[in-house]
Image (cartoon, rainbow, N blue to C red; front, side, top):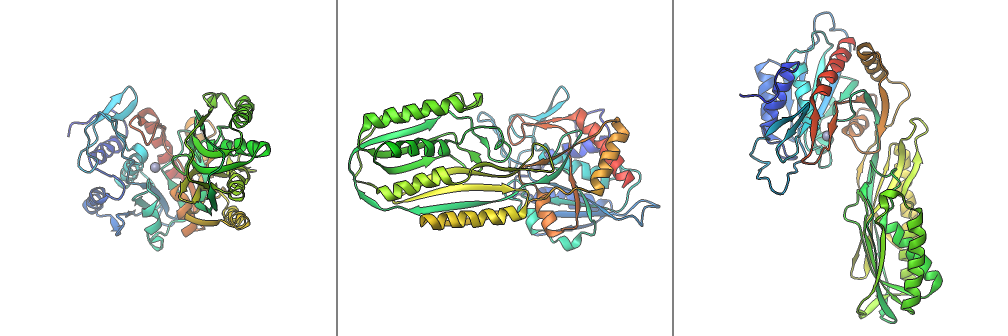
Length: 479
Ligand SMILES: [Zn+2]
């Protein structure tokens, strides 16, 4: 096989990465990569287990003199996000990725690179292949379908694992350790509205031009939520005159900060309504961050409909928009700058006489998530609405003392003379599921530098991979 990456060490690590890049590994299509891993284990006489979810678990005994040390678990996922540029012909179920070098960066032509999390797979294979001279018993867990809800990690039988210290290889950057992640759940809050025959003048009000972003990673960015801003506009308007809503539509995905929201309403005095909304929009524009400088509110007269929601239902809808807690709800008191608890009112849809509000709530503290569900239940009850919670996944709470974290800090310091940074992320990782299944597992999450993951611009910094490998090797040697 003609290789793209040459002259980098350890050679086997980069060879494994190139080999798996030739294997299609879309989420829920991990058969071929699981076959490859099983073949790898068989050919080296390593104990392995493959389950129905195409998770693969491979064990390697300790080297001489380290048999009495406790085992360590390495873990990463085999599937990848499959995104391509519109002008690229690529079938993710059959075609190999086309890797190329862009200086020290590795990329794939027109598609995602799958370094998230293929680099973890390659590193675990290099360890299992004997690239680390001295180590305790190694257990490697290759999980499937992480990118689509962590299905593999959820279905694995954890009684197979004896290790109680673990390195997840799906996060971080060179010189940084992730030591906690958020859990979360989704809520569909549904309000059945009363209708009456239309009266007044119909107006469409649109909020647009906001920056948006990921409801986990960007929730602390100060970017405004279009649905919440619509709430503020409508609340200002009902103080001013009689308003009845006809519909509310906002946002695109529950885990994305909404950039747009649209309301159709009936007002008694259209011109006064536009004046009021324009004044309120100017007040808001003045408060927003530079990222949201394209913020616009537009008002246009539209054809009246046969019916509209009555005043009481309209007031309830505006109450949901204004009173549901949203954005950053708590910061960590353990890690500076880390969001601990947040909510995003991502999407609003009107279906006939029902309006449904879709929320995503995240927290790295389990008790907070339970309390947040009760809070939304009570809020819904107060309004005569219903709240359905789903997609619940556990968080991984930061702990003050961690042996494996100390070992990594030591290894990194030994090699660089510098202190690694300790972070936590306000998003979900498989570490949350694993720590819920094995609560006494001591975990860190680390990885090399990657850019623009989940997009065709995804790039892996090969210099950082070499430096990261040395730290991982050192860590395993001193464990
Ligand atoms: Zn990943």
